[in-house]
Image 1 (cartoon, helix red, strand yellow):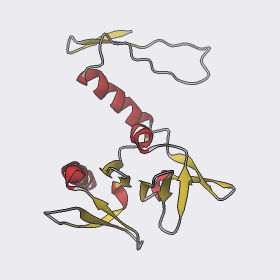
Image 2: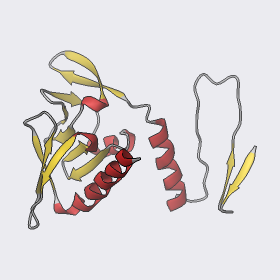
Image 3: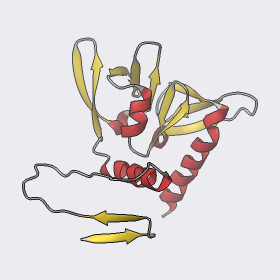
Image 4: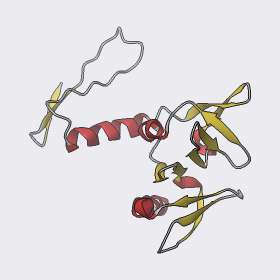
Length: 163
């Protein structure tokens, strides 16, 4: 089955009974904005990453991403923060940006937050603004560079809640 989208790309679905899991391959002449949008959309839909492996001391934990308020890096490691604890993850922040669901967004050079967990933002026009989370004492800063994108994502969350 083939379909043309805006006369720019062709979409073909092949059914293969021998596959053990679904596979999506994007073939393109160049990596343009349309192809990147398709890739991002497929990644968001597949959001197979609803759970992740976390590490603390010598133990592995399997937690839902909905429990994670934010990811933060120090010089050596990336940590996932829940309401009451912090766990090490085996991903860099740029890798997390690629695999995390739509609810997660970068808010500074060193932090990605779960938008669904944001309780309030203390806005500061001249420097970083302070994010507070539901049911937690933990706080992070959103830099001015990332504030606009966060604001748009929060507005999108609010619009989805109204529907």
